[in-house]
Amino acid sequence: MYAMKTYVTKGMLALAVSTLLIISCKKEQSKDEQQQQAAEESMLAEAKQAVNEKAAAVAKFEREYSSAAGFAAARSHNKNVLQVLEHPAFFKTFIAAVEKTGLRSTLSAATLNATLFAPTDAAFAKLPAPLNNAANIAAISDPELVNSLRNIILYHLQDTKKLRQQFAQGRSSAITLKPEESQNDHLVYLSNSFGLLLLNGKSLVLLSNINASNGMIHIVDDVLLPPVESLSQVVMTYPEYATLYSALIKAELFGQLTGPGNFTLFAPSNAAFAKLPVPFNTAANIDTISDPAQVATLAKILQYHICESRYFAWDLGHYNSIVTMAPALNNRVTGLM
Image (tube, rainbow, N blue to C red; front, side):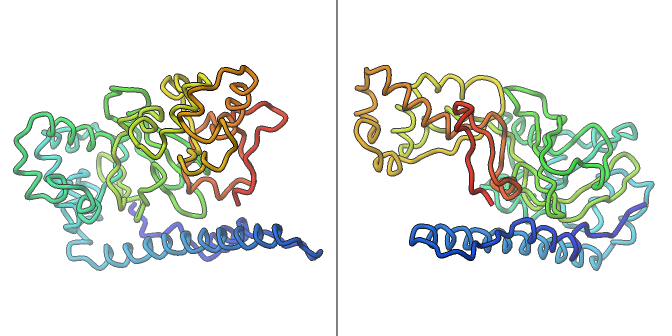
């Protein structure tokens, strides 16, 4: 049965806020300690505000959806996922994308038994043209773009029918129906915390457990886009990471961020490196390093910025520290919450 129930309660929010609180020391503090405490308090206030804003967005959408015309028809369990999404009309762009990519038969099949994260029209409107509305999608003629759109739709589908409460707490990942074309590009990453569920660290589940005859629907506020670049490719792309690029090459860590696995990179900008002493302060100086001891020092610095696990910004509010690739005696990034 479809459950019109929000999974954000006052108790959950209280728990989220209490989880983030830091107890201030009563002893006299130095100026640096006071500045650090002020920065932490500011960060915690921002985290609390983010939780509250997302919870409010969930509550607002539930009200809008439940009052929309045709809501009663959407509750009928003998409708497949596409028929459910036609009532009410929040999903015209998604339906147009399904039609354009030839996926109607897939999503209408009685044997589908899938979980669908369905983006709203407002979610598609955040994308650039021609993916931003139903009319533009219907007019697409480029076969390559149609194939890309097909993969985007499949990236919203998991081959198991799953209720909201069945998702693991904390961080997890799930295989989608998108074919794997490059490493991890068929996986979606879930962050289930503070009574909220986010996908790929950004897309918020607005409403859960809409039951259809061939699947379970969860409505999301951002279109999920499969990753297309490795961390090393991202570093190469942006000029503000030119020094980081040189440092990764010199320390022989660049290839590791190209290979298989899940990583988190806390990426220092050129301006951040400029605060370090010579020869670690610019790309040109790093390129000239030949002393093995300096190369080893640079490697340790960089390893302290890399985690061999995937953390989204939303996830970091759970941890006082996380383990990095740095040597074991000094391998934790602290002060995350």
